[in-house]
Image (cartoon, rainbow, N blue to C red):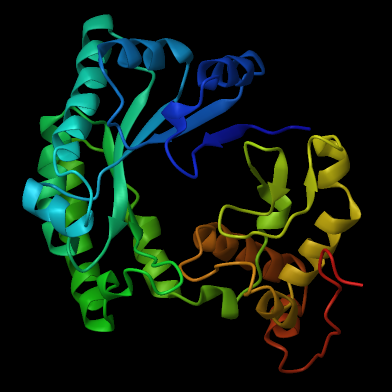
Length: 307
């Protein structure tokens, strides 16, 4: 169906999956680009060698801290020794990559920015350099259902952060590390509730497939659109439930009605949606006005599972 990229992540740790490397081999056989997310604590020399041999294009290691104190603040209740385990895991991959001259796989240190770590970006960048990473990636912090809400940034924090991001961008480029700061600055400019100001187009370019075969629109949306145990992906992608989701998500009332099932704050696809919406409004006269609802009214399309 023309899929080009697969992101392998977990509701937990992907390296625990007993058939992970069979999955990766199947994807590479079909010439997919693969991103793999991990917390790095399970990576030893053997795992590092397996990952380098798997054909993974981008290994994204989640590490929210640049030093042990920051780690304890960002990971309450977690064994603080995991900070060293993650560092050792990253170092094992980058060391073996250098020894094998295996330059294809990019190793990226990633993590959200919250009130406990946003002032420590310089330390995380220094750690990424020390460990031999190819780049860093940051994201807005999102709390879930109010849990750890105290870690979210205030508007003043975000203002200070956006100024610092420009400084860190120059530091990263001087160090030769890749980064996503331009997209991150755009995401902060779009704001936490960007879903309320522009349509969601994720239903046209992405899908989330859980390990049990359940297909959902994205990893923040829990609307079931089909299951691979019962239907092919082609049938699900072109099916009634997916079409209803797409229709609902490009209208403000429809997207608002899904907020009980979709956690759209700090949307993962905000930057993609922004670029797509700009293109749509250029190609489709009046599309922006129709979304805003200032001049046109729409009936909300039925959502999956509704009569």
